[in-house]
Image 1 (cartoon, rainbow, N blue to C red):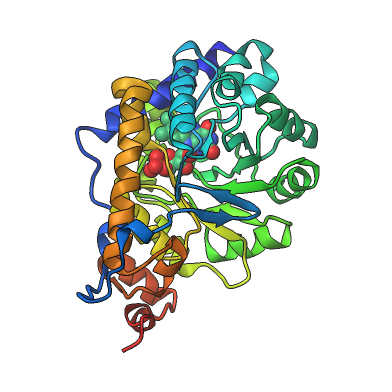
Image 2: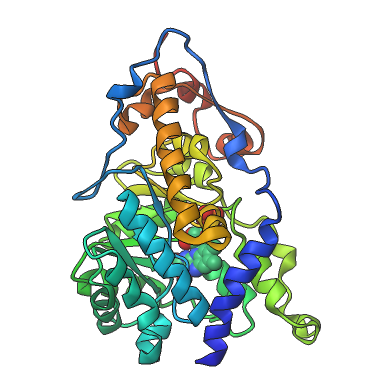
Length: 359
Ligand code: FNR
């Protein structure tokens, strides 16, 4: 347990250290809106609520799965749960595997329900666990949904990670069938491709969070956790740097008729939230940016940040002429740079995107 526990602390510490003073440029910078000066609406009539599956969320963004189980990360979960309660924002916890295997770690997750008894809470589990584990994960938090994460790139970069991904489809199917609440399949920062989304649909998955590249980077985090001995013996995968797709690439590449989409990965501010919504996300997940606020001053810092994000997201929707997030899907999107190159290679019609609102 202590090895796995210290990995939890390492992830938080390294995610924070590698972020530096400011988050870098990413694919969100490759998307712009066409400005229509007479298109705006009254901000007081903008309603930010979104429908995700059978749920209604009052904020179009949520705190994505991060942590829990150690003393430090339990404090982080408590502060996050308080902030979620105070703002009505949905939230997820990090993987509860550690608590399923070591009951003494359960408090690090149960604390979320203690602080946030009626809010929307998602449990989180890695693919490969049993049907029974899925049920226990949900029960631990009385969760409203279960996030099931696919993290093949991260596992590859972990010396102790699995090298057998062949049983993952069967595992997804098993967990979906067993879970008493809807399952949201997510990546951890490398994206879900068109093919993956179609396959998930066939496996019974109704909601997926594409969680793409450009924010928290688990290749870099895992590489930094190795000592120089491990690096010398072939455990350094920094050569894969840049692997995977951004959230926007995934959204633009997503199939018709696939799962309902959530997006995350590299969301730095409310404008990124709006861009993801405009590209087809039903709601937007934020991990690294909210972790920074939590480490800075807990709920006392995160609550005002969320309130600012709500106010600014509302203002940007009014500017763009959208009275609700769903209306953003008829805004004109200009896609440039690396993201445009991805779209061209994948046969995505960029002109159609740039002229969605008509003449
Ligand atoms: C994560 N993430 C994550 N995801 C998951 O499904 N289970 C987990 O246990 C964790 N653990 C975790 C720890 C820390 C410290 C961070 C910052 C993130 C991944 C997270 O949910 C998200 O998919 C990625 O971080 C990309 O989003 P951001 O961070 O770029 O907003």
